[in-house]
Amino acid sequence: MNIQIEKQADGHYLATSDNLQGSVAQVKTIGETVEIAIDVAEKLMDRKFWSDAVDSNPVFSFLLDDEEDIYSVTDGEPFNG
Image (cartoon, rainbow, N blue to C red; front, side):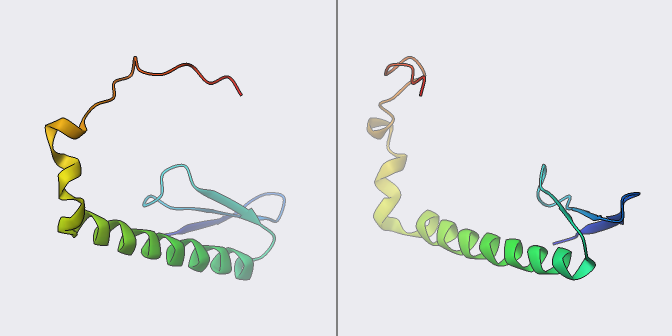
């Protein structure tokens, strides 16, 4: 994962990543930036591991059947919580 760190005019550091569109961290030290980046990377790797495991597990292959595609955007009621 590539992370760009820029020092801002107010002294904070801004971290962004092309790998995670829309993700931004603004902290006071580079150390905090690295800590956050490592935490995010670990969570993403864990999420990818489990996602890949489910995607490749034949137990869930029935979900790809046309009979399972039973919902459309017009189903249900709007939720205005």
